[in-house]
Length: 355
Image (cartoon, rainbow, N blue to C red):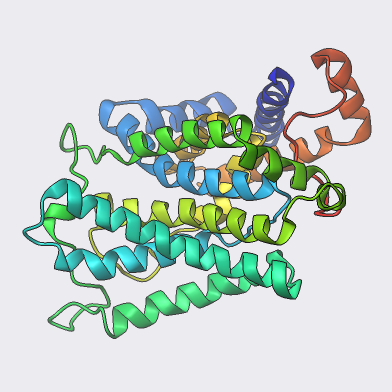
């Protein structure tokens, strides 16, 4: 259990070291760059809370990816599932004025989860019943979700004045309120942490979780021993989509309070990196999401302080993933087995659904 986390930390350290070498070669002080990044992410209470806010959607989408990947279902559609969840939340939210706040918030969150579940479950159904590769279907459904959001904010959900491509704001009773103003800290992160604990228990303490992971380890063997592969595929993808849809509903309920185009800057794609860095461990995803939130939040301060493009953060994230993939090669896996007392990397995804 410890070895995968060590590999993730080592990959981050190695990526930072390699980036530092490049910065030195360019005549830029790595110490100044990373100090500015840390200052932007943690330099004040407001910076810290903003880091938490930026990490929140990554917790939900990271959990969505981890659940699907643990079953060797390559859900690349968390971004689309997030958007569909946001659309349903944004559509029902304006009609909840006068409702008790707990009920209104619950309705908005359930609507988001339901939207994501439908979108993810559709890809699962296509995989189970028509053998459509979920990588292709989820990617294509992402584009459908983006265009659906654009149609909604230019059409049926457009605000009353018709002046801006945005939806009518949701009712105040459906808002997840801010804490410690002027920060945007809200209950979204608490919900995400609770879900991370729930996903951990689901994966490792329930029969459904055992079946899910068994399918992920070897689909053919799981089918041979009588596991309902088709049903599991649909249920896992629906659950994964529900988690991603919750990210959209939380964002609408807590931050934007309305829909608009480009609501997501790519959280569903960044979540793949979050899940891989956490080695698909739901508890680790909270820490990984916080790390990526800090990198995103600190990147602008880094540009202001030392003139280094915030794209550097994306380079770091990409290098971490590449290094982790290198660590999963046989020679590193054998080394991990000797150091960690295991035969290979824990909770690593199978290379293919039929592996």
